[in-house]
Image (tube, rainbow, N blue to C red; front, side, top):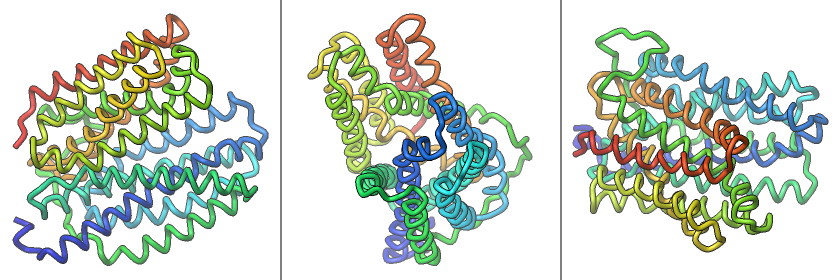
Length: 385
């Protein structure tokens, strides 16, 4: 076991370094997101143009998903993570300097590609570090990502209030994150790539042993991004709340999700991974049903809290389980699962809009509640230690 090879000091160093890369990812992405309105105004983009150009980021992410999987089969997760972080930080500095929509689209395509390289490899690195610990540590890594997201949003708010141009803001963040990347690179876990015994196509679907994991991630990530995109509008249009209350409801959801991630590892130690995944599915189902059946500020807010707790730990715990698969190395396994998971993240929220347009937003959320039921169903069919 790896835990017998590396002493406690080494394991702690690897854990801290991996946490830093999760923080880099979260802070960099939220820093960009916080300046989207400023860049829209800077380039004089209307809503349709902005929506179209923003789609370049997930396209870059999805197209490089299988490439990242192949790279993780040839190189260590450490090398890909550092390379991805370097490119991610460099590209982060560019959106504020774009002067037309095509430049921004190209930058966002590269940003999505770099984000994929970083995120998949840092999760693969986290799985390797997890092997050094007898207790679960995976959900804490994702909790750190969430805290970084809050931090980036707060810095973005400060920069906007001080009238700092997006170019300077993102450049400063980029340089600082590059410094962190360079400093912590020697402290990362020196893993080795594990070659697959069976050759697979770049765009191959997960094998049967991983398909349940993929569907669980699909349902969770679809719910998570739907809450990102539609929770505020739900509070405004269905609950009938003010804009400030709608923002507060979204913040409550985010705080619940972040809290759940930091508490997740301790709960796994007490209850085990499979029970936490089951509870997560039930929380998503009951939370969204509560917001549908009782569309009033207090019960809907409680529903948002339940949904936030529900989505908090699912993906990191599924990654932890899937990382133990013998059919491929952890990086390729996560790439395979993430391909399906990100489809839910990217495709389902727009479908929510179409359903809402045809029926109502309440019906859309009713359909999303079924994602919780899908998680419960799939979890009952997996084996956990």
